[in-house]
Image 1 (cartoon, rainbow, N blue to C red):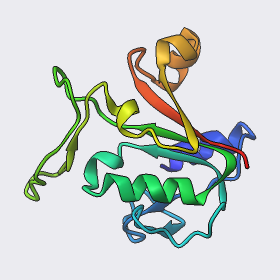
Image 2 (image 1 turned 180 degrees about the horizontal axis):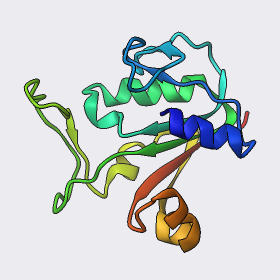
Image 3 (image 1 turned 90 degrees about the horizontal axis):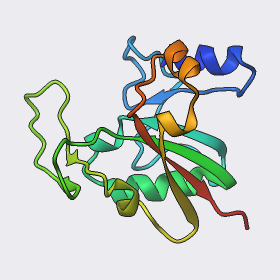
Length: 156
């Protein structure tokens, strides 16, 4: 989002490029269009990927994970965030209901970290309350129970 880009650049943390499936969508103002199943980026092109609430919309999860691994530099990291379905024990692929505004292809459960494991990268599940101090969570509006998975590609 433009807000995240501003935050990252304002804090001097990164030069940020945004992508979305639709380059013409004014809500997100992406720098370029990309389908996460096959991006226009070269191998080992990016240091860091922020992928928040995207994977649940794409049926071909494995293709997305392959693509993230392909474009990350060795030692690079990806922040993957997905909604967890309350009460669900195991993640599952579901039929997409195209009539819903936020059609999901997946319902994810706490086993998401196991679902995305693969050779060549390390997956760490992070809970905001354990990783981000209360004042910072308040400053940036982060729920203490919010989870994300940090994936780091092994260095060669």
